[in-house]
Length: 133
Image (cartoon, rainbow, N blue to C red; front, side, top):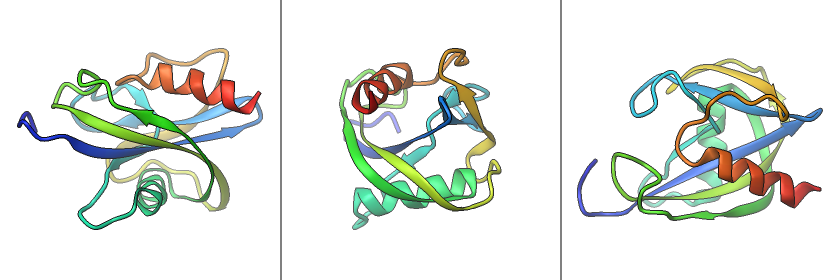
């Protein structure tokens, strides 16, 4: 994807009991690293629908949107090329937690003891925490 076009992605932030849901990336870039669940927005898909779809595919969880966290557009945030991510704060209402699709694993991590994160997800999580406090 190292072309000259900008790609649109989404990420979902799910908090529960002072923990945040992360997925272990199955593919490059950042294979084996932890990240917020998310992915590319398909052609003619709304970002709101894309984040719910991606989170379900990667975690097995059915969610609803609580709020918009922000838009992240640093051209260097993804080594594959310029991606802009729309990030939403989500709430679980169903499903069963399991890694799937592009995720090798999915689990909740204590906010005070996060693993090394892919992309700019450390920045995003800090913004999430500022919004909910």
